[in-house]
Structure formats: C-alpha cells, structure tokens
Amino acid sequence: MKTVAYHNLGCKVNAYEMDAMIESLRQHGYQIVPFEEKADIYIINTCTVTNIADRKSRQMLHRAKKANPKGIVVAVGCYVQADTQAVEADNAVDLLIGNNRKKDLVEILENYMDGVMQESVIDIHHTSEYEQMQITSTAEHTRAYIKIQDGCNQFCTYCMIPYARGRVRCREKKSVLEEIKGLVAAGYKEFVLTGIHISSYGMEELLFLIQEIDMIEGVERIRLGSLEPRIITEDFTKELSALTHLCPHFHLSLQSGCDSVLKRMNRHYTTEEYLKGVWLLRKYFDNPAITTDVIVGFPGETELEFDITRKFVEVVEFYEMHIFKYSKRRGTKAAMMPEQVSEEIKIHRSNVLQAIEQQHSKAFRASYIGKNKQVLLEEKRVLAGKEYWIGHTKEYVKVACEAQDKMLENQLITGKIKGFFQDDILLM
Image (tube, rainbow, N blue to C red; front, side, top):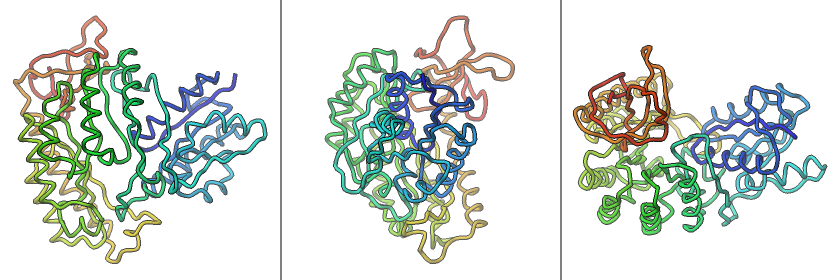
C-alpha cells in the first residue's frame, strides 16, 4: 500500500478540491499520512493568487522532495496552471496536474507510475466543462464547504485567477443537492456555498439552489461565500430573508471605497451601488454580519482617494474587514501601472483601516451581549486554564461556553451571551 502526504494552499475552493482528491485516493487503496512523515507520494495543491503564494507553493514542493528524494512529488492546481513552464523546469516536481484535471488525479498518477504520460494540464481558457468532484466528508467535522462554481470572467486588473481558473463554469443543481444530502446523512449541519465567483451562478439560479437546500431535512445552517454587490437586489434579499436556515452573514467584496480606484481595478460596481446593497441587507435582516476585503496602496491611490475609502468604511461599519496591502502580481495589468505606492505608505494605510476594523468589530460583538443566541459548537479548547467548547453564532461570531462532561461537538445550543471572554470571543 503506497502512502500519500498532502498539503493544501489557498482558498476554500482549493480546500474542497483537496478533500475530494484525498477521498478518491483513499477509495483506491492509498494510505494517507501526515505531511511530516516520509511518504511515497506528495500532493501539493498550489495557489497563485499572489507572488507570495507562488513562492509558498515552490517552498512546499521543495520541502516534499527533500523529505523523500525518491518520492513522487505532484504539483497540482493554480500555480501549475498559471506558470506551467516554471513548474516543469523545477527539479523538485515529478508530475504536474492543472485545474480541471484534479478529478483525474488517481488515473494520471497511476499511469505515471506505469511509465505512461498523459495530458495533465489543459488550455483552461477554452473549456466549458465544470469539473465534477464530490465529497462525503471534510477535514472539518461540523461545517462543509460545497463548491458550486468555478472560473471568473471579471478580469480585475490586479488578479491572476481568471488566467488560472478559466471562464465561468457552474455545477448542476442536482449534483449540489445530492452531495449535501449525503453530508447531512454523515452528520454535517452547516454548509457554505463556495466558488471562485459564485455570483456568476446567476441571481435566480443561485436563489433557487439556496431555497432547495433550505428545504433539505437536517440542514441547520447555510452560508454564502463572497458575493458581488450587484447581486444584492431588493427581490433577491427579500427572498433570502424568508429562508429558515440561511445565516445572516454576508461577505460583500469591496476592495476600495473610492470610485476612481474601483475603475482602475476594473471592478464592476460603484460605491453607491455597494452602499445600496448594505442598506438592503440591513433592511431585511436583523443586525446581519457584513464582512469585506479591502486593498490599500493600489497603483495611483492618492491620499485623497485613500481618505475617501477610510470615510466609506467608517460609514458602513463592517463586522470584519480583511485588509491587504497591494502586491504586484506579475502578468496582471496593475503590475504595469504607473505611480506604484511605496511599502511605507501601504503599511500606514493598512494600520489606519485595521484600527477602524477592530473598533467596529468589537462594537458588533458587543451588540450581542445580553441576547439569546444559537451556537454551533465545533471544538474543545483550554483557555485560561479551563476547558471550553468553542463555536459560532449564525452571524459567525465566536462564542465560548464552559465544557461539560458530555460530548458537545457538532451540537446546537442556545443561551444568553454574558460578555467578552477574550477580544474576539464572547462567553455564553
């Protein structure tokens, strides 16, 4: 029996695909071992979202080859797809598998071991095939990420993902529902719909899918991955608010609170449209958690443009902001733009927004003190010398409750929030 070690880099879509690949390997008789152990085969699921992600992917490939020079090191995914020639030239890599071929991992691997080479990196830009993969379990025990879509047609000027993932391809609704039913039978209670750009699933189609998932017996929670602001219309939001199990937790991608910067980024909305979406979510949901991503120091971002962004995020009052300092990505339009912002200025601007984020995030959590909230318990931890069960509310606010003798993992409990336990954890 051959042993396989693996390492996953990147987004939740990559994590889903890694789970599917590992499940397929197990079904074909391979033994999965920790990455720290010596293995016959190493699978590195790579990422290319930034230059740093490329570097981390290379580091993990080299680490695998160093762990067992005679082992087979397999580079899989986005870095392979975006820079095939560089990966082919890397002596640490024995086998390459691009996107839309992960489902064929076992076949490609076994052919390689038999001395038969086959196509393993396709022209991702000229395929309309959705890569059919399915899981019956995940690395997590309570929450399952469900991939419903792949590819992106947006071509933001800072982003490599359309080049690594190809054009938009959507999964059939029937396949999604069957997978969720199987996971419900396995005990999962919470499901997160994810993809590269799930808004491209289509407003009506996405709504119909969520409505059908909501009716599956045993589904307790549904979360949505990152959404584009323009999908948040009055009708769409009203229909979502009528669902029993949808979590009032929405990640609306912003990137900048200044229209001129958004235009340079090739983002397809204005701050006015964004604010309308926020208003609609707060109209139809009671104190929803709204989170976002913001890039500071985008090429040409002036002090005035940054100040406009600062004022915008202060108005919105996000529950959480993921703040990124712009990093040049070779192969993108933004990397060639004039007036690149210095690292010193990026750090300052990031710090300014981080301070705002911490203030708003704490205020949002504080608004739940004294209220009864439902929590899905996920893991037991020792904090301040005592055992606690840790879980999340529907809004994805982290909560701790004192551990009891009985096993509470994957259980839903309801209780009153007493106050702050730690900066980012409330106590029930």
